Length: 305
Length: 246
Image 1 (cartoon, rainbow over the protein chains, first blue to last red):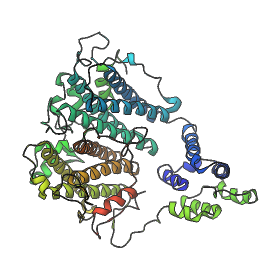
Image 2: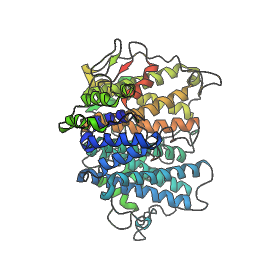
Image 3: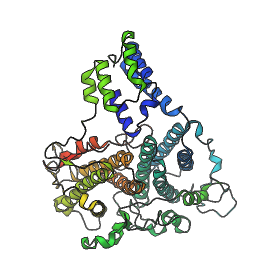
Image 4: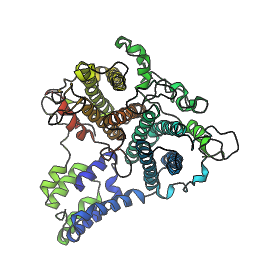
């Protein structure tokens, strides 16, 4: 445990860390006291509380950052309750790798909720109840369901799971730039984003029959990454928007986009003779919160998320 | 730890500089003098500014430094997937098999990433790096029992997990929102790669405690940690110095 290196690292991302830890003087007095009276093993706990004070109680997060994190939090609730019910439904998920994976993903989402609530503190939204969601897509029975058999047909469950994870990846990516003012929070969000992508990859692998099966890139045989617009996803009538363009499309292009940094890569790298799909597969695309909300509302009872 | 203390007699002296902002480095010099724990502090302090050991490739500073850092890692990954295509493990894979199509896609994706950074950096790009894959057995799927060399999938897993941790850890050093978003577009694809490679080695290992922490957050890595691993796969003269990314 190298406290000074830790603080030094934090100072790189938050030049005001010393002010936050202010009074610096008191902190180091405290460290001295801790060293005298408490075993070294207890110091991480002390540090944790020190930083929690520094970051948790020195004032509210800027509204823009809190809004982005609360939006992410809502999506994590959406995902968590989806898996919670799936895992709890007897006879739905085959015992073995399927159940293990979906349980792992459920637990990860629950931890993401806790992590986001921890960062937001008192600025977090109220806990969302399970009853806020309807994963058949019938919006509480007020319209025809999109996925009537989501909790009786394992393949439908996986199809919705993939859809939610791919949406989550795009949502975090779309929110990242709005977190740049706080490096600690940005890094935390990035560290959730890549876990969502790992989930998405595995669910796609599961849907096509496991890692020993090659993906076709569409429909029921997705690759582990998004190829073009993925043929509209797992259930195109309901999921095409997940792979389409957001608003504005210039900033949030469809997943089939092949222009990065102003360069049409398919054209610029034509001499490599790579398959056309590779140029879109190599990049995931961000999505704006309004478009993500519209997608998520398919699984929400009522008209607000 | 217990050495970081001071007694009441130097209280006034200790407090004095705290009335004014302290620059980081002088702060540590000061703390070092006070703490009497010089060894601990030396091990913890930053590298000196602007040092570039002879023969290392300095990726630079600011956003171009981060982009060159990413370019270097993509060069390494692309070289790996290019080289494996000549090994008997890959050449023995059946056409259309899951592993062949996955390794083909990863080759395409990483070369595209490399070329994007090369194009974006233009004349500011670092040189093409010379790789050293002598610790990888391109004829083996995974490390053979008793072998000190990585198999193809072991190495792929190492590179993909490292790439994810590297992009996540470098995000905070990027000042341009456009570049941050670009890095985000790439890192999630690297995470998708990592998950599949891990599943190919052992189905269900797409996340694990080696890559995520107790809060289910990916374990991101500082550039200095990343190059400590990456440099083992680069020849002398191509090893990376990332000390100016800060």
